[in-house]
Length: 396
Image 1 (tube, rainbow, N blue to C red):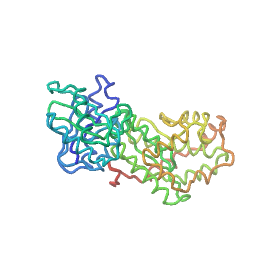
Image 2 (tube, rainbow, N blue to C red):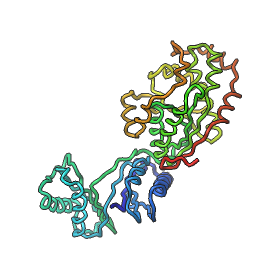
Image 3 (cartoon, one colour):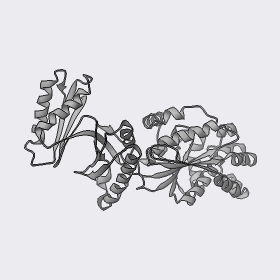
Image 4 (cartoon, one colour):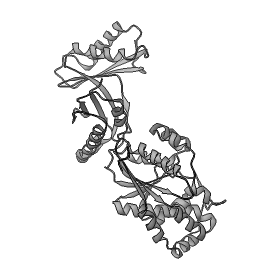
């Protein structure tokens, strides 16, 4: 029943002279999501420090969910629009409260009068509408501190917006305003959450997955595709590169000390990701590393990988605990996919005692005497590429 969505921006007001660029990126993302989910005409414009989306047809729950995934928005409210007349407000409020069917017991009215020609001030309007609600809804009482429902009134020049529902968004910056990343995905919890965190810091991302065929089956690839479908909703679509990595792992495991296998797997994953970054013009890499979580994520191993990488490696989860990561995974709806069991080739090749503080002399000697460039290039050239739209659907 909503044809108006009032979109509240996050950090864009801090951007000074660059603000128009951020608003342009945000509006383009919103328009792309609307075109993917909505049939009919629409308009999107700045109104009094917020964006107002007006739709020809009612907003579907699918559209509402799509907008809730847009970085750069802190929240939005589906609103009823009425004429600028105090008598027109209560019928709209009634429509909103009747939908609650006695589920809520306390309320608060919050009014903001932008239109100074409107005869009532903000406080007076809140008191007036609050009084009308108390007369009609005997089951409701006022609670100004922790109300179960907030009746939000915005009096603008041409309309009054009436809403009782606020939907949270990621916040942060619009996608595409902070650079372009290649994000390394695995089937676990961490890397999808890391990708989400970089999306809300304004980074556009392409994903790369190292598929250790024939040591693992098709199910792990399908799992990564499912995760990518979710992540695509947060960044206006994406591409996933599925790189065959089994030959690389096989070669490394035959030529290096056993305890260095995992670290060298990581090193050459980073190298292929850097090759892809060069190919598509990306600025940095992103991983789901959290300090000390597994052997390859000690501070010494991270430093060794950083020195070997030609691109900056971003690790947004570096200081997170596992429970914090799991909570975020549930929030962004990747948890139930990540929890599905899958074969892990790294575990198959994993040494009994992986190195946690590598000796640089051996590390450098191995790299100098084992030129695997041809193998890495072959792996990248044979990658399968999947393209996803803003709804998370596979386009090609």
